[in-house]
View 1 (tube, helix red, strand yellow):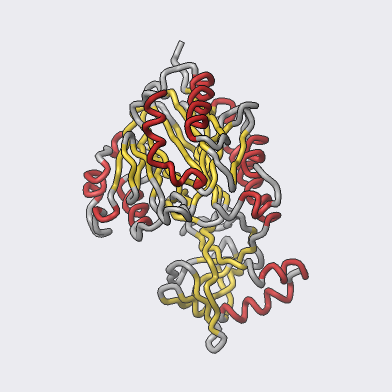
View 2 (tube, one colour):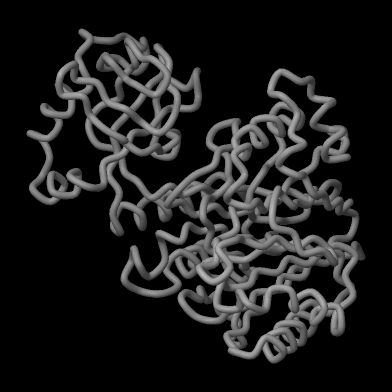
Length: 414
């Protein structure tokens, strides 16, 4: 009989770090019942003054060939009752162990000051990670939030490893230490990116729920410069990609506001975003096909808008709203789409969840929302992760840094 992939997740909310480590190690090993090839550990900022003690305490109780992890604004794991639990604003420790037969597990650390130029060949990025593209790896990435080159890193990895899934998040900053912490085998690090590449008998599927719903029509950027949109055209015919007369974004927004309900009009005052389509060739765009970016400002003199990303003429955009209901509906739609498009649900072994610190109870008004909704659609697999200062996940065929997003990486055997 073929050896099966297994994942185990354990969570502790004990305020003593020694007790928390003992609890998660015992629970994870009891659940895994197999040799662990990989460990992922996430620790809440409540333990910030004790981060340096975590790895020695783990090493006393656990021998792992590869271990990565980081600090988080909160942590996510499976409690003693076997239910996913999201721990926020209190002490929490999450440990995930994976038994990965037939999988090559390759850890790496990328210092932020060693990134190649974006005009470098793919081989420069391969040399940086030490991972062969021929392995067709899947990546888990944990980065410090102060690295200015995170977007360059994601673009470079996409260039060198096209088609490889890449998920992860930015470690959260502690108010006690004013820094974030990364764990890499037996090292405690404070900058760069730690990661692991998984290749061989493993598939990692992704769900990226950005928490927004579209409003109005799809438009094409007629004129834009850097992150400024000067004029847009309504996409009249989705099949022919025909466009109407160009208008300023402000004119479009003023017209759009007239058609909104009172509730949406009030929401748009503080929760209006811009979605940028990332598929150049898809004719009929759906929710989830857009990369959501902040609307930074409006210039009433010329009717232009500034957004949190570069734009260029020809790109398609659509305005979006975000609130708890929109976020819940977006995640549920993504889960339904995943369930319909894959037959992997019964074969999935484990999942990683990287959720924004702006979600959780602060958004929904109740605990465990994203993880429990996930469990209703993809049952009986352990989930672990943390609350991030930025989430890493794909939209279309490219990987991006997101905000207010939940990114799932679902692992199974082929």
